[in-house]
Image 1 (spheres, rainbow, N blue to C red):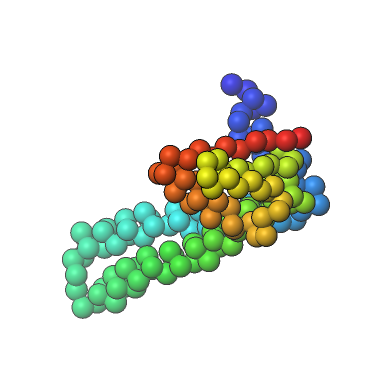
Image 2 (tube, rainbow, N blue to C red; image 1 turned 45 degrees about the vertical axis):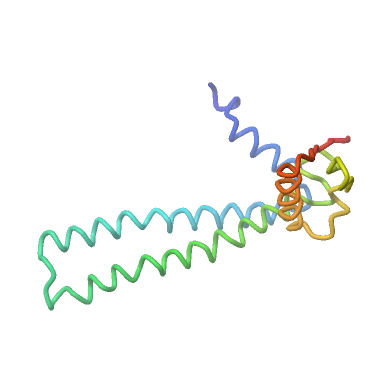
Length: 154
């Protein structure tokens, strides 16, 4: 598989194409994701340093505060990770709903069959995070034997 046939490259190109007018946001959330993942990659290094100190020196009065500091880095790094990763995920969701477009497919009608009979255009949903509610409704509908389908219109 060549570089041009790589699915990640293809999807990135499509995202960039459909993000016209919102590309600064794409650059911002990409940078936030990269920094967040670099921070997440520090966890094994800190653990290795912690174990190395304990194996070589043991736990002594001289290094106890260093060990406590290394242990305290885990929740701190987790907080910093989510402080970057969380807003980046929200920016991705906002970018996915630019100008009422849903992942470049145009208007998407979400309908629940059966007695609940509800049909909505994606752009009519008041807030993009309400998609989560639609997913939950779909799970409830499936449990009750109703069917949900997504119809794509161009």
